[in-house]
Image 1 (cartoon, rainbow, N blue to C red):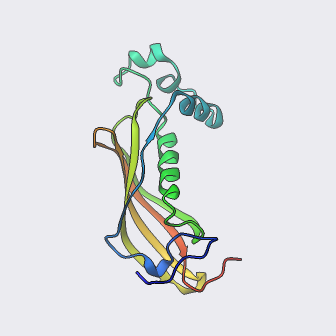
Image 2: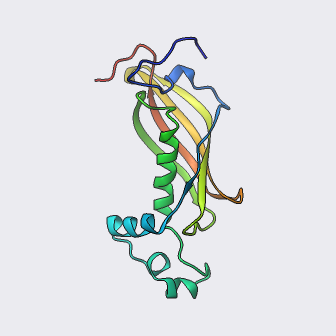
Length: 161
């Protein structure tokens, strides 16, 4: 990476700074009762597997589980909170090959491992596409979901606006 320091308005990496194989690991976040209830209200998904303790206890999961899309949203927030695209992201472009592998229970703590799979310069957009592999990992080191994201990132010297 270059010696150039990000401006105070951005601390993210420019497109040219992403390298295949680069890994970023987020901090952890515990999924709470409030998260599940709030997401049910926001999304309208009041499925008993998420909101009814008696129903969920009789399910194959044995207890209430977080909505898969809630955990995906938490993963997005964890990834962004690392700052690696703060001030340089142009757009979130694509989710590919997303797989929900294991349930996430209320009280589980997840973190995200991101790895740069490829980069593709897009000069007409003033930067390029970065394809990231993501693994959402629980407190036991088990991958609960995984897939690929494509984000568009501003290049050095490119102004947003």
